Length: 270
Image 1 (cartoon, rainbow, N blue to C red):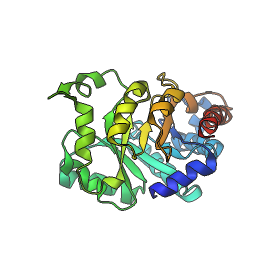
Image 2 (cartoon, helix red, strand yellow; image 1 turned 90 degrees about the vertical axis):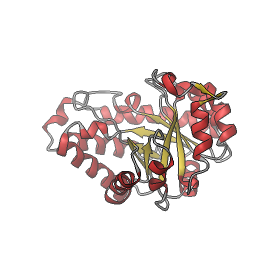
Image 3 (cartoon, rainbow, N blue to C red; image 1 turned 30 degrees about the vertical axis):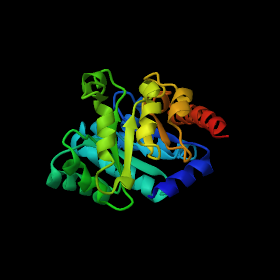
Image 4 (spheres, helix red, strand yellow; image 1 turned 120 degrees about the vertical axis):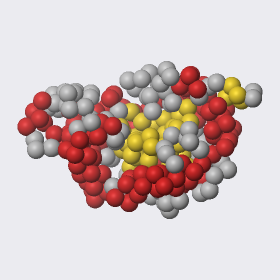
C-alpha cells in the first residue's frame, strides 16, 4: 500500500484509528474456546465489527508466537482474511525485528512476501544495515521504534549524548538511509509533549502512536503536537477496544469503543 492510499482511507473514513489485535487466550470470551481456532475466531469477529471505523490493524506477533504453530497459523489466517476482505486497510506486523543485513532480509521476506503485511515494526539499535533491507521493498513500510511509551524508554531513549537526546539522533540518522520514503516511526502517546520536537525533525512522516486508552495517552494532546498536513498519525488502541467486553457481545462492544474514538477523530479532522 502506498502512503497516498493510506491518506485517502483516512479522508474517506474520517478516521486514523489503528486497532491492535493483541490476543490473549485467557482474556477472550469463554464461548470462543470451543472454536477450532479461537484466536482467529476472535479476530474475525473484531474485524467484521470494526473495519469501517479504522484504517489499520496491528497484530503484535508475540501474542501469536506464544502459542507456537497454532498461533502462527491464526496470524496467517488473520492477515489473509484482512487482505482478501479489506485490502484497503493498512496492516502492521508489530514484530519489533532488527538484526544484521542478511537476517533482516529474511525477516522482511517473512512479513512482506509470505504474510503480505503492508508494514513491520523494527528496532534501530543495530543501525542502517539492519533497517535498509526492510526499506528496499517497494510500497512496503518500515516503522522504526523512535520514542516508546514504556517506563524503560527513559533508560536509553531520552539520554543526552553530545548535547542531544538519543531518540533525536536516531530520527536524524534514519533520514540518511536509502528509501526513507518508506519509513514511519513509533512514538508513544504517553510522550505527547515530545511530539513538537519530533515534528521538527520528521515533519512529513507517518507516526504510529500506541498508548491511547488503557495506557493513558491523550488523543487531543497527540493531535495538537503530532498532526501534519496529511494527518500523519495512526493512533493505536488495543486492550481498550478488543477487551471492551468478555461476553458474547464482545464484538459489538469493540465496535462501540472504536466508534467513540472515530467520532473524536472526525471532530478533530473537521
